[in-house]
Image 1 (tube, rainbow, N blue to C red):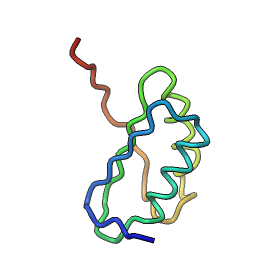
Image 2 (cartoon, rainbow, N blue to C red; image 1 turned 180 degrees about the horizontal axis):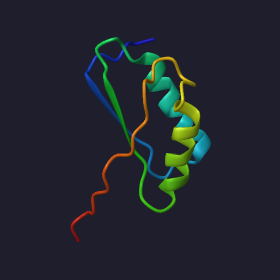
Image 3 (tube, rainbow, N blue to C red; image 1 turned 45 degrees about the vertical axis):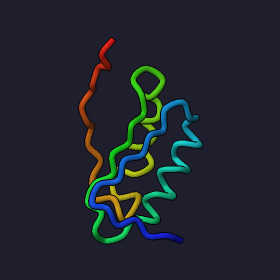
Amino acid sequence: MVMLSEPIITIDVHGMTVEKALEVIQKKVNAAGSAVYEVRVIHGFHGGTRIRSAVKEEFGYGREPKVKRCSQGITKELPG
């Protein structure tokens, strides 16, 4: 397994099912080295809220030893 060593990892799970998104996120968390201090998950706005909720449920509250906390990010509107 290749260890991820960038300090911030960004994972885009747009268009994925909740199950697939959690699988992808878990793989990245497992591969994260000690230099990683933040994982950003881009999940979308409307359908992405299911993914956001699942991430909080799966990785929050001490369920994943490598994850110290889950916090909600910011919403950005695309120009257009």
